[in-house]
Image (tube, rainbow, N blue to C red):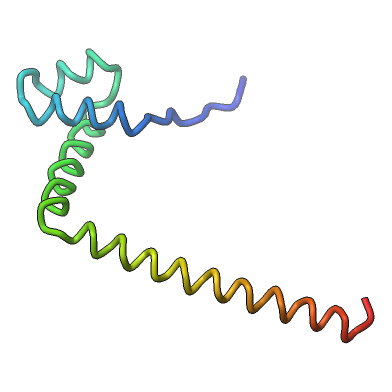
Amino acid sequence: MGKVTRRRYTADLKAKVALEAIRGELTLAELSVKHGIHQTMIAAWKKQAIEGMAVTFSGKAEAVQATSEEELTKLHAKLGQLAIEKDFLSKAFGR
């Protein structure tokens, strides 16, 4: 018996199915049969899509992106500092 792995869905497929669920032309059960995905997953994707839309229009997305860029800059600086310290200590101990 082989190893059973979880199925991974692309972001495009999730968005497509969530949009169909939001439109409401088909029920969750019908979408489940159509795409071969469990109803609870479709409901969760629908909920995430709706919440994501609220963030998009609230302007919080730009704030989150700016914060992550600042953190990335700080992490790069810290990485450089640690690399220099490592090189210094390696030379100090004669390696």
